[in-house]
Length: 374
Image 1 (cartoon, one colour):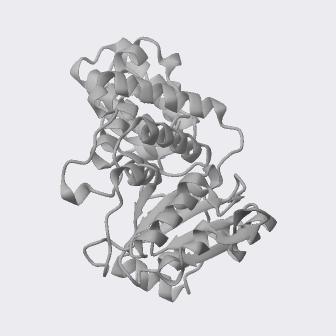
Image 2: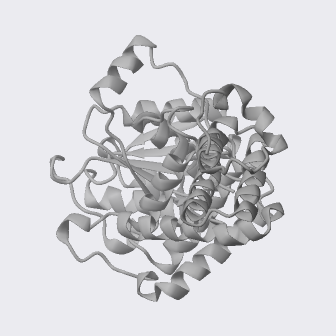
Image 3: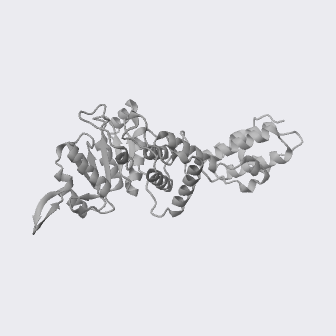
């Protein structure tokens, strides 16, 4: 299912994780809010993601604007009044795939902030309705370090995907050395109905077991204005998970998306539930090795084989040993020889002298040549 990449294959840092999560949100039309201290490069990050997706970006800084730059300028029209949209909104009509970046959201004047949020939630600027394909990204400094900053209300915060951005010293140094070289971004598949259905089913199963997490308003002051679980944010979290899977994004990005929609505690519980649902029962596989799917996520294959080996070590009969070798062979045939190697070595240690060697052992000849048996 979701393709978790091992750390040895690809190490993701904060910049990559946030960029990938943001790119996925933009492609599915989920408004995102970047939280970070001044000078962290939030604007550059959004512009880089826009460039990577091949989409224009309109940067609109709230502290430098009037409310009319979002609510529209009142103009007399006959006996009535219309609200004319600003130039940046008109350019969105010319380029319907534009990313509108609303910077300094929480430090703008309250009237400007309210007008900016109307763009996010109603997708209108004055009397102009933005095209559905226009994506909206906002950025804000945490209230405790922003002069005049304020928290978002819980209802408003619940509409955003929240992404915290602060690169480490090592990431910053690497970025400077590479001149902030653009990184590849995940591309969400246009057709993902089956994935949407699967993630919705997983979500339903989770909420049936943890109904108290369907809605949970923030209780602590430090949680105000951030992500929290509601029927709306859970639904959007499932959609983002399906989009991330269709794009082949790693588990770290999935975690960013889930935490950013429903908060860390509920998100971690949900992901643990998903992981348990996807693991195949070891005794079932020992009774019928043909049921094993070695083409699934690498971490699932590794965990499943580990569970199988624990069961075989507890009760190692010839039949169970042979069945375990079938599972190891299927894993190796799927191109995961490195994952299958340790179970193969363990099986050789568990082998009785009178048991014949399986045919699948040939694929591990180099690894097992010096392994003691018996």
